[in-house]
Length: 256
Image 1 (cartoon, rainbow, N blue to C red):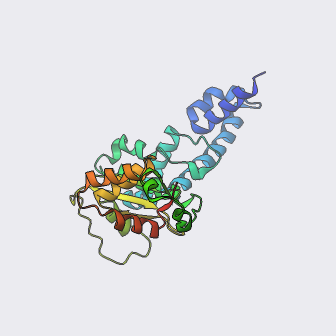
Image 2: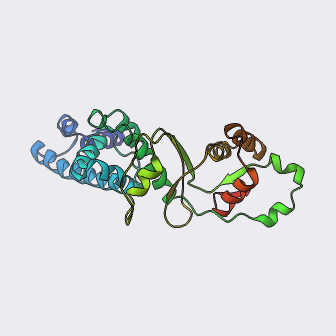
Image 3: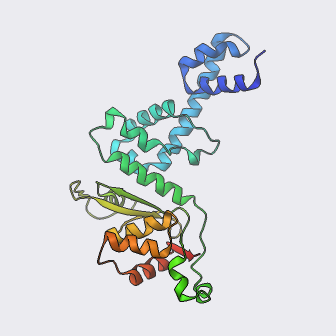
């Protein structure tokens, strides 16, 4: 008799790979042919559900490569990276890494960064709601302590620096977009903030100083350290204007 962990591991492996199912068919009761046929049904459901999860998380990648190619791409990813969570909303975190090493998309060098952007947007969509900035609480903090406070960003905020025009790639692939579809892939590097101000995730390009400030804040640096990083990256960085903008946009939710 096989131990339960062995049976569970064998069942999971058989669902991920037909070849493994043939090797492990002896773990299951009944005729081998019937076992393999039933495992194939389960395997089809697993691949189908994982593919739908990837389609939901990476709609722009799907539009770029086409529906048929994306299905084959998803199948290859599911086989290489089976889901390790019962929540399929968490599936796809390593998709960009997979694309970076997937030879059939090597002629689309911007695709991994598009996938990274979409994963951050997917994560932002499911992030918890954040409270508004409490200016009243800040009034009780002595001004000389401001530099030691740490900016707290809204849940789901993420930054991405790329050689590709990510904001443009995001914008032209949104449902309802009515502008021109020209994309200059040689437009230069882009720094984007991914967040969810209300009900939908958004991607916006930000200047070097703002990127440096928010990056330091995400890393847990103090307000003084974050402002220093911003000024180092961009001598024209205006701290008062930037702070007001990010507080108003619900990016900075507190100074703690």
